[in-house]
Length: 134
Image (cartoon, rainbow, N blue to C red):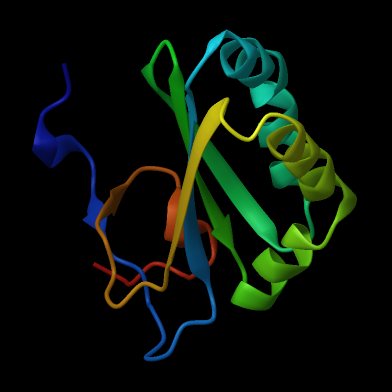
């Protein structure tokens, strides 16, 4: 196992007013219909988000057998809003309209206020902003 001293930890050069946003969204299946829809579509949702204009990275995680969470990094809030107006998002919402009680959906949008810490290859906000010299 590598020691903490065998690799560098760095921060990013985050602008005072960054345009980039982090979008956190989750899907919680509330019944069998929602459960099967979620598992049938979770990879498609991740791929459609990843391919959207302005999205630079998507991280997906399993919270439990009936819940997934995705964190996506966007160049700007405008890019994220444009995704909401697009066909993939419309297709996702059609299920919700047809089965309003099958899923619990939640989302939050954040703008970074200070740099996180990173090691090795860039992830998250480090894919958008250059690293600071150590």
